[in-house]
Length: 294
Ligand SMILES: Nc1nc2c(c(=O)[nH]1)N[C@@H](CN(C=O)c1ccc(C(=O)N[C@@H](CCC(=O)O)C(=O)O)cc1)CN2
Image 1 (cartoon, rainbow, N blue to C red):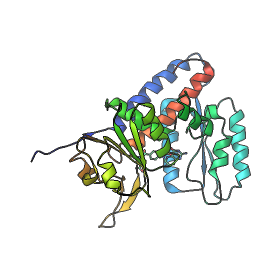
Image 2 (image 1 turned 180 degrees about the vertical axis):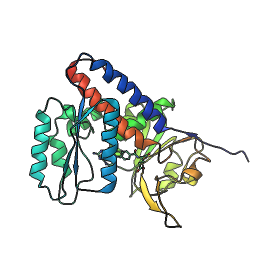
Image 3 (image 1 turned 30 degrees about the vertical axis):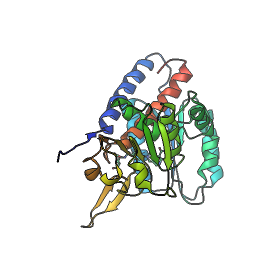
Image 4 (image 1 turned 30 degrees about the horizontal axis):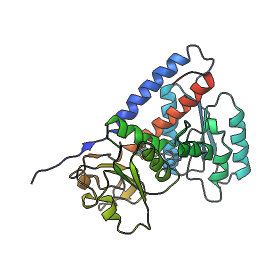
């Protein structure tokens, strides 16, 4: 029997390439602009994973020449204080992008906070105005993880037109927006979720399979059509048989690579693209303020 090894979609390399391009563009623009682009990340509480992601975002800002206006709040901060912080950042001309790091500690509601962010500074692309623009096919700030997935598919010239894309997961952060983005590129999209019967029969029909459910290694080669592009959006920390902690996706990589045409690794696939698209959105907002093209 012939063996197959899927092509790896290298999100880390693509993220570096895009960041380099952004850095050059920022360097060019700041020769004449009176300020650099600015991003404000609101972090509430001390969830260790969130704290690490926020540090990554701040590090990326520093590398690219974006000013950070991060605000860190304790978990018992009243919701009203967070609304006041967003209001200040909305009015701060040095700030082009604002986001609330998710999840928030229990007792705090992220939805009204996201609704309060100025849609033109909504670097996460989660404000209903930006989601509405996506739905209507209008320009706007796009959600970072789905936008990162689309950039990966584009980079590796994976044909979407007329192809059957199956998206597992219906979150507002990934599943819903990525389905709309694939539809806009003429894919035939099926959205699947926890109540979908016979998931495997469906995923085996997919030319493009996007998995965003947060269930470690849910998808193995038996669920994949030969030659399909498999995009793993899951990031799960699991403890292995020997008690060692490791990171894994929603896809069993070593199995899926035997049948897929393309597959993203975890780590090093979609994750780095999320942070990069956040930088991209921030620079896009900055360019709009300056009245120039990105
Ligand atoms: N406001 C938001 N909150 C959250 C988002 C988001 O897009 N906006 N997404 C996730 C967390 N996240 C960014 O915030 C994020 C997750 C993972 C990565 C990443 O680069 N992962 C690496 C592995 C990192 C590790 O070793 O732990 C990878 O996959 O290679 C970046 C960003 C939820 N919250």
